[in-house]
Length: 302
Length: 278
Image 1 (cartoon, each protein chain N blue to C red):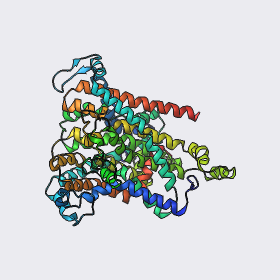
Image 2 (tube, rainbow over the protein chains, first blue to last red):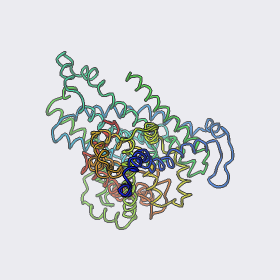
Image 3 (cartoon, helix red, strand yellow):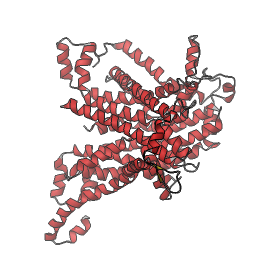
């Protein structure tokens, strides 16, 4: 760009530069925007549209109207998956709560604390495909660590992953492991940015312990609460890896979730239209949660 | 803040140590299994200290007598170009969004952020069709392309926030001097945003390395599959050879874990500063 510039006469140069200031941002953004539109934005629209069709992956798509959604309403596996997603959402707040507790505990400057933080954070760095294997072993009925511990205290052994009524819970527990680590790190950053003067003033007023935490520290952590809530919700709804690795949705679909059910319908049963309808419901759920949060956040800011 | 929980000194240290042991116990158990002998597993000894450590034998068997090595290589061959591509796209787009005022600037930013929050499933079918139509199904290039596109959303936000914090005089001075925009980006901006580049690089490395869903949806052959998806194939093959599955799992977890320990500051700065934007 600048190479051709030097050769031009001075009069044209300013005009060219003005144009350059106009065109460059477009040129700089274009590659990222193009790729992002092609692989993220367009697919969202395409999936929503596909949910109104029947399609088996080859051949023509046939119009289904709301047929796929009607079928969903009567599908017991869809219902189980949706309920499991809601249970997951209901339990995910444990991650921010635990993460905050860890952060408060580890919020000190010593060298050893830095090391401890790194190890508490480690689960977040592991692939969920690996985390799933770790927890599948942990909860295994025959040789799992959980039963080894229960045995140590002479308690009866359990088989949570093999039981239809409980199989979703070990998976959610496995998800809390990395998610708590994430929340901890965000809260540690939040705590580090607090104004120490406010805490001192509150202490002089006689506030301490839980009162200090509730009325002085927690309100100042708003940006952290926001990030942590948003990311935890999205991560809970996204969870696919753990279900795939730990139970494949079983036994008898009792631990299925929308993300995994969509995968089954699309890539195992080749029912793309139906799968797109499941994905659309999941998308709506995520969009609903995120906008609810944004709205509350904005209202609180005012 | 130490007063918040009103726990001081040794009591607190002991609590932290105890919690840490509990916290990492599931991981430690897998590490222990990975160095145990098959004989001990057959005898039902899962949790005793291994009588003989099979560290070298087990890991050598996993690396050289199975496809694990190939899967790990595949992961590297996907991750490195994906990180490089993401950085290239995000630095350019982030610079443009940070230093020019134009209509739609915030809208583009919002789309980048919003797009990164959607569940993968809403993208899966069209992305697979696209990759297929490009002739890239079951290729590393297809995976790289998708990861690059997706990670660019968050990476651009990060770069944009970082560049906005630079003193405006830095870029303005260069513009007044008549330096071209590309040169400003390369010689003025890039040198001062090195910490941001490092942070995005370690995060994108970790996210892409740990991806499971897209590896499953966009690849199927051993020659191409990354290690997260490959592990599941191995697990099906090894069934009860937990010592081998554990060793493979530890190997798959090692690169991002090592990177995290080596680049801890950048990693955490990336997560905390990049997302919150201050």
